[in-house]
Length: 237
Image 1 (tube, helix red, strand yellow):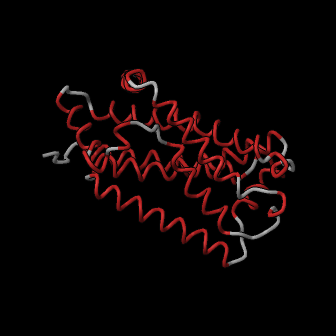
Image 2 (cartoon, rainbow, N blue to C red; image 1 turned 90 degrees about the horizontal axis):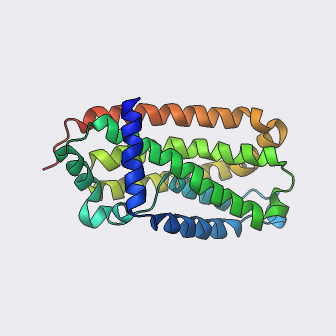
């Protein structure tokens, strides 16, 4: 319990030291929500289109991040490596560092997705009107599970690789996401419609929602454990 408490202390100090970054999160989520909302109109509700799928697959992983100076300058300054070096000099146990990152992920997912999906509902209410309130929450939580799944890979590269490798890994992930959306489209599928149907039919009992959350949570936990072991032997020189 002490490691979680200490992890929360690190997270809260980082947040308190730069509170205006919350404003950047709000602005970015509203911007991404606006761009995404342009794809959801009643006219294209029944169309099989890969673009909305790709947009959601691309945007949702960003909801697991708090946008800060470290994130903006990771390529120029290799800021994540510098951060890890700083924690080692204090010293702060690596498991506390990892728990603070997990707390940040959970906070970001709650904060950012409330803004993102709240904005989509407000702007595109006619598109989502077939879903009840519970159904829409189920729809959003399904995507949160996907965000958990994707965030683990980003944490791995944050703590174990240099900034340039992290950049290339991010680009590869985006290419894979585009490929997935295209494959679904070529097979006549539509991820958004599929998730909506399950959310509409089952609400918070949706097997897709629970499967997404379970798989995302388990994979995040597994990758964090692997990352933690490798952090201990990483050469930061």
